[in-house]
Image (tube, rainbow, N blue to C red):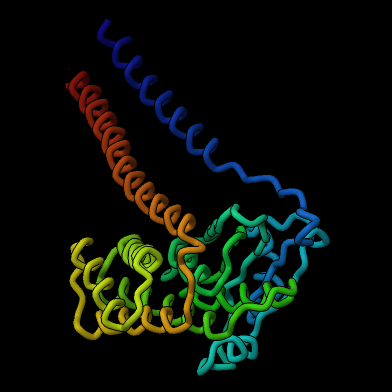
Length: 304
């Protein structure tokens, strides 16, 4: 009887492993390529100019480009970098690539990193915040790279895609958006802040700017200080000034965040959901770990 109980426990272990494997496989299915919105034309795929042919094909797969004839393909280079962002290096190596599908007004901005393991500094929410600052409101954007990169140059490719599609973006806003992205990654890297916390801070400041419509630099400084305190974030004086200078530039450019308030609310919701998901996943996998630890212990006890 004891012998059969041993094998029953072993069989349970095997079946449990198979069940978990099936769940993981089911969650990893690929999305089908979407139909084309004729109002906006073909989605635009922007390839980093440094990519070789093999890397370009790999990026196509990551961006779910099954038929190249169903997208408009362009390349972004260092020359584009200095065109859109003042003071950058025209010899920069460009690997980050993106697929941009424009959406109807009100559909919002959806950002996905197809290769998050290779986009090492910029998160989905950082991209979303920067693009809203640049004036890009309703689109689906997928970013990918075949090698590890910071992810900053993807912004330039997205800017070029909008120019190709016939929609001119304000150069000053593009440059401020690039500065915002640099500050966001700096805070995450140098201050050791969680990336989601950085995105939450930027989003909440923009929401307050939309609500309060600050008239002076002092008003902007007060909003920044209030949100730092509210989120329990401590920064060096240098980084506090960087934030104040950034949002003062946005105020001087008269960027109307009230027009994208709903999208800012969505970013806030997404950030909170991600945090809750991480906590939930930790609890789930801890439960799985505890289950197998107890199961192994039960099997070991039987053989004693």
